[in-house]
Amino acid sequence: NSMIARRMQRVRPSPTATISDRVRELESAGKGVINLGEGELDFATPERIGYAGIEAIIHHQTKYTAVSGTAELKAAIAHKFVRDNGLHFSAQQIIAGNGAKQLIFNALMATVDAGQQVIIPAPYWVSYPDMVTLAEGEPVIVATEEQHGWKLQPAQLAAALTPESRWLILNSPGNPTGAVYRARELAALAEVLVDHPQVLIMSDDIYEPLRYGQTPFATFAEVAPQLADRVLTVNGVSKSHAMTGWRLGYAAGPRWLIAAMQTLQSQSTSNPGSISQAAAVVALTQPQDFFTEWLDKLNQRRQRVLDMVAATDGLSAQIPEGAFYIFANCQQLIGRTTPQGKPLADDKALAEWLLAEAQVAVLHGSAFGTPGYLRIAYAVDDTLLDEACRRLQAACGRLG
Ligand code: PLP
Image (cartoon, rainbow, N blue to C red; front, side):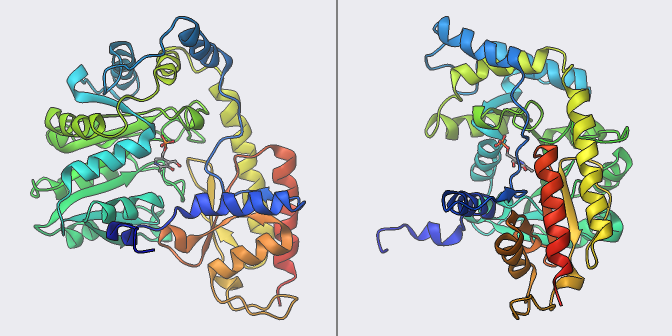
């Protein structure tokens, strides 16, 4: 349609949203689809956080707030950064927005000029490259290796840097691989960046608390204080508190950057919902006593999927240390023939066939910039997950 702006040619619909639409379609056609494609915990938002939202409504905290968030919320965010990361931010260095997603978008829109480059290690979260192209920037995709635990190597970073580099985007624990960077690994990347003052570093920490087996957490601003005036730390309550629908994320960094993001926000979405802000204050300041139970459950589910992968001819996977995804290598299944007599050309064809054959939705690795893999999200309840694993294994077993 000629009415659609040219900039829309630079953006594809999010594949995660597309798969969810497809699942809903199949469900309304009466198919019992199990969705392992969604990046969302099945747990309920903890009750006392929900009540904080209800109280906000009853007490008329239902009006516009400051664009970058209420003073109470900013204090709660500052508290979180001190408590969990040893990072100290003033109120002017903090902004809340409608999810981490909006803050990442605003940061890129506010800083990337036409033709400037953003270094994105692959596999990557699906939205980074499209956000960069919307901002007229150029995504520079650097393929990380399974044998390096899916982590960007300092030499790879050095090779990717140019005078036009504007950002490096890091995401740990990572979506889709679950990889968690150690402090020393971040320090080695920081060392490369010291001599490139044109580069900002975005640390997407949205999966911070979702780590298994004592895996430590490190974030770039903490590890590399000498670069702190170039680091934007992004986080939110979507994954940490099962609050995806509340749309509340936050970011902290240098004042000039936060101010620019705030200007953009003031002319677009304004403040995030006042009710969500009130609930997030409770989420960020009160004990996360529910979390041990969540992690135990997720850990069992992770094991369930890993067992299925190990038992399935043609699949293999690294043990992810965080998040709630298994990024399974399916290269040996590509080229095999379905019982319907169709050869599977690539990971996308495999994922589509699994949806039709096993009625289980998973995402193809190419959506994350890494063909030959499947992302299996295990944030669904145990019975469903068990059934999904049985179906996936059986379906793969039927490939010729
Ligand atoms: N960053 C990563 C890596 C994600 O996986 C997601 C959500 O899937 C987000 C950011 C966005 O989170 P939010 O719900 O806060 O917008």
